[in-house]
Image (cartoon, rainbow, N blue to C red; front, top):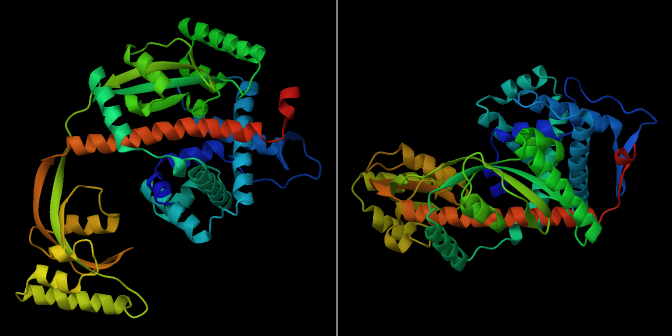
Length: 437
């Protein structure tokens, strides 16, 4: 859940508007007794009304893009493909008993509103002004959380990054002279199913070569990606955003490092199909200077014998004793429940931004040097904290290593997610009636 919450940002709203079954411009209509079915996904169905609603929402998202929309038939295929994948993942969530309770849902929506710098009531008013039913929006968010949890369990939680992998990654970057370089990429995938026949592989290759020819003849990359790509970012014009080399699939690294801004690669073959990438832009990274805080704290945990009131009262007493001249370190050794640093007088050492839980960091940032906080609560218990000193520190080496770990994990996750989704689809019964119309 922690990883999920870190990902909550402005993109939530755009994601839901583009991928949910929300009806743009109206609340969901009552389903007629007999309704056209456009796809059967195991025991589930996708109706024409659901597809049309989704298609309208995606068009609303894409209408402000400078490139024109692809024909409706092309966009329908892309949208339906993603609806099928969403249905498969929601079915898996239901089969595994994965649920999202109302408290989690409410907290998530509050975070979305905060990310948009709105109160919950203001956020709801904005949605409804744009024609989105709030109750339906809530259920769309619930489904997106379910899908995130399924992916977390099936893919993310299984990804491991070793220290040796980080060392190798950094060594390779140094050898290429690209330790600080970042690349803004576009991506198109023409997929090939697992165990595809030679004829099917050749057909996919020919399709990819046709796409590449059109791009090199001046076709708009974003428009083409929306129309033909099987990648997860197709409806975003294939935009992968800014990535370091280590964040890219391994087979992209050599082509990207040799490309100039504006270049389109040749075909890149992988087990999932044929890729085409475009280098939209590139930039270099500066040194990472942070403000570190040297602090110490006393922690009182709550349990059956020590409730919140008792913990706060104890910390107020200890704080007053320190103000009256008692030694903070001695009181920490005698009373702190943080076994990791109580013997060191509660000393937390030098703390980098983002290392502590948000509530703790917020309290640190409020304090002047030498000041002791009032008691406050985190998920670990109740604390008082004192800031001993602050300094500006070049944290580039630590930061780079942390970023390397994150980018390796992201690369592995993206590669495994693509493979897992393909396997999920291959193992399912799918009847795409739209393809036969």
